Length: 398
Image (cartoon, rainbow, N blue to C red):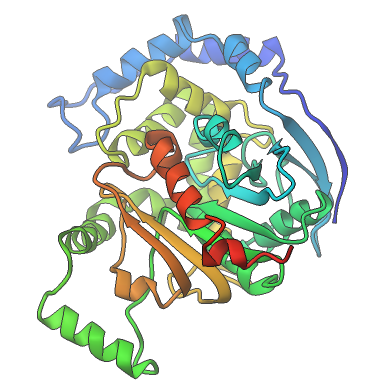
């Protein structure tokens, strides 16, 4: 259970900021052929420019001051088989008596900070929401898990126990990336508590032969190529991703220590590794140098260290529950928001195998980091999905 829930203040010692600046000042860049495009990865001039900005212009202290304006808290969490650890989270409470508790999950290379733009919108929302945003263990300002074997089941248990410790017997969840798997596993393990899930990254397997009607519809749709333009594009993107853009995934899944050493020691290496995803996973989002430095700094100054975050890729495919596109959540209401530049997506017919789908919406713009790129769109979808006359709202006992 979650205990010792107390306010939390982010405070990075000046010695660590000075250490970062020394490393940035002494950074070495490769002399490689650079055509100025992204075919080989981030263009070296871009990385040089942002590293210089990080060193000379970016102010961690000013950013830290802004972060501390959020309602930050810390809880002590006990997970079966592991030592208790500290979990950082944001808790924005609504004054509305009928507010829905909503836990929002980040993934990699995101953080709790992804919700910065949606928090004020959700504060003014009807229906109303209590918003809870944890830094997942090994991320942000949560502690590192020292013992191997902390996989999807443990992430799910952690977040469920946080919600119970806050007094929320029933709640909803929103997420993409790792949040998509964590939310669905919570729904399986604790179905009486997690009543509805909204996802902005959706991946499912085709309907199986054990569901004959859906399977026949799949065969008809697939062989006649009756996918919508968005669905066809999503399938092409998925094939492209698995063939030429998932190198980071395989590396972090198979050899987390190898990449971890580089990320822990080199801020420019960390910058390049994350910046690559920020640009290529978004829909022409105009990242400023300050924004990139903010996102990367949250990894460099993370409580567990930059290397800890990639271990989720190794652990997620081991243990009792593993990350899988076919996770079915019986009884939990599901809603999906589709963004065209998401790294991959599967067709609606496939996705309806995941549970009781009560909401779907296609968006014309947006990518992987939807709460950052398109905060108004995400909040509007949540408002519609959880409208008081809808099935998602009705799933909560009052």
